[in-house]
Image 1 (cartoon, helix red, strand yellow):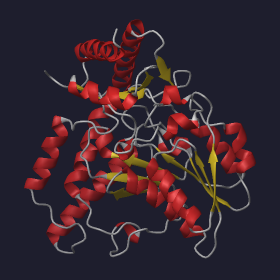
Image 2 (image 1 turned 180 degrees about the vertical axis):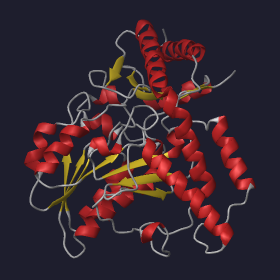
Image 3 (image 1 turned 45 degrees about the vertical axis):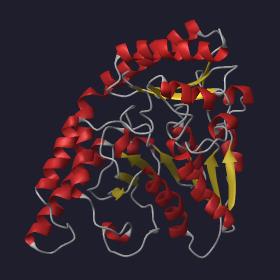
Length: 386
């Protein structure tokens, strides 16, 4: 039985063009771009040209009188850590302050913020409504003269809910507080423009948009100071030491270049497939709940509750039936705890405990969606004894 992969938010397969680019770059044996000899300088030129083009596609400007920065990292997790810890430590190294994060952030943003809490900082969580949208009307009341950073993710990893970042930036700008946004799940699924968002920093992860795993990045607005969280080298202006992986960077660029001309069609196609998927399941499972359905969502993400069933049991049964999905973020997939995102939305535990995340990608077909609906409903009815 062929497996149907519906866990693209965890990771999505690399495009063939990306595989070819990375393989070719590795075969060319690029020298260390930090080396001063000619092979090293050739690598440096290739790397910096790719960096500028990636930034341009994402709406940043690395040149001119007020250049932004693109810092390559090992992935979105490191990028979020670098933003949250690096921004607050750079501006206030000798004192503690206050940080605000949304209640539905990814663990890679929550845990650095909690690390600051253990170090004596104050931390507030901005709550969300029943659809998972931040209660932006409460944000101004959380800000204090000691607030050093606000972090609100752009597209949620569990529900796909898209947050009103423009509203957050407007409120924070009035209080002169920088905003970080985790855009890891949004890149490749929605048009995203860094400068238009107005944030101080934005994290990305290549393997979420058909790029190579092991590479991410942090876009940093001009004038935003950043303290390194790693030490041991002067690469990337000393902010992120370590040899830059030229082949992976070229792979990231290829993924973005391929996505750019087809982004609107890609978004519409994913949304139609998701609607087909949800309506098909709803027709065969009365009482089914689509979590976050009342809010704008990423076009590929569907978080569904199957009341009366246990989500963990259903996950295993679907895997045996050849449908790969998840209970939420891959970073917490080893945990049996209920989804923090769904709990923050105030949903009943009966809904939270019966929920699974299905996420579509560029390789998902309509035939797979129809077959997935059939398999999922069959498994659900078997578990219920229908």
